[in-house]
Length: 353
Image (cartoon, rainbow, N blue to C red; front, top):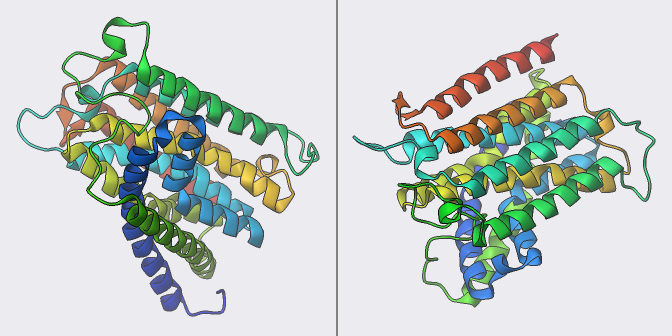
């Protein structure tokens, strides 16, 4: 696509993003139906299928970037996507439910289960930072120990979150008083799915998945070519513009969940997706046959630290449950917004310098 004019690349990028938005919404709806009918959330294998389904844009972009050798775009999209999707909680907090007397989302959704999900995200990000310091020749069977450990932590995290959604040795099962009445676990303590036959849901799911995969590849290639033409670094592009494009479904479904009163679901989907994204480094390593994390540059590690910091801010918010709002959002969301803007400024400084 590098030979195409800039305006056409932008058009392809916007069109692909629109497809990701629409298909992402359909994926979310049909995933809820299939989960309800097939009880996917009750087994580990089902939870993995659900995670794959809700992160198809990122999977498509990572696979495309790995095959084309654009590892920095894949890394920037994964790590920048985690930071940006954490900011999605701020967007949901500010625009999901407004009005007099409405409390911040971390007050309404407070639960120990969500705090556990945040801890899993930070644990995975810690391994990402550690893995970046390993020698690049530490490779066996197209795998490196860091990406294997990331995948293992993610699976263990799924099991712990699933267990926490059923029972915790705390008063009132770890749920705070005056919080959202919905159950706490990962995603699938969901609102009632829309009326739809299982066969129809499966067909829509398959079509939406295929559209998402094709659009994801188109967005990655068009965006990479366009950023190259204007001199924007692959890391900066992947961490901002590309990450925003792949976060569109989370914004839409998150706002919908909050308006339906399921605040826990909105936050759990973000944390669950963020814990899964670094697992894509395993995919990139297998495809490229190279140790991906040891090739991480300063921008990648910087983004990882920013993502961990933003996650910890919300973990603290879920514990302390702030009631005060600033410009329509909770104090923790305001802090996340400020930190993210400062973080993007630092990322620009790293890219320019």
